[in-house]
Every structure is written in structure tokens, then in C-alpha cells.
Amino acid sequence: MDAIWIVVIVIVALIVLGALAVAGRRRSEQVREEKREEAQGVREEARVTARRAEQARLQAEEQAERASNEGEAARELERKAAQIDPDVDDADLDLERER
Image (tube, rainbow, N blue to C red; front, top):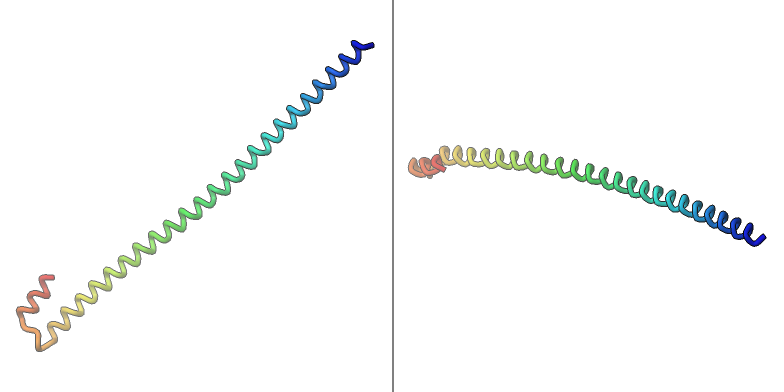
């Protein structure tokens, strides 16, 4: 009778160990899936941030272009004013054109 109880206890212990192993494996897979989802969220955030950075870069380029055009317009107006001004002589106009 003692041998039967030892066999039963060993079988129950093996079943419990197997159940613990299966539960541990499931938990491990669950943690892995959670990490995948977290990584996907971080990737999406990275894509959004990259899009915002690209938009900011394009806006900066457009603003720089506008600033350059405004500067050229200001220089042109300054040349025109120098041509109209009776107190500016031809030597000053030549210097203005060289700039």
C-alpha cells in the first residue's frame, strides 16, 4: 500500500509541475505580447514625431524663403529710393548697385 501512495504522490507532483510549467509559459507569452504592443505604440509615436519634425522643417524652409524674398524687396526699394532722392549723387548709386 505504501508503494501505491508514493506512485500517486509522484504522479500528482508531476501533474502540478506540468501545470506550473504551462502557466509559466502562458505568462511569459502574455508578457511578450504586452511588450510587442508597447513597442508598437512607441513606433507609432516615433512616426508622429517624425512627421511633425518634417512639417516644421518644411515650414522653416518656407519662412527662410519668404525672409530672403522680403530682404531682396527691401534692397530693391532702397535702390529705388536712392535713385529718387535728389541728395544722393551718382557715386553713391554706384556703391549701392555693387552691394
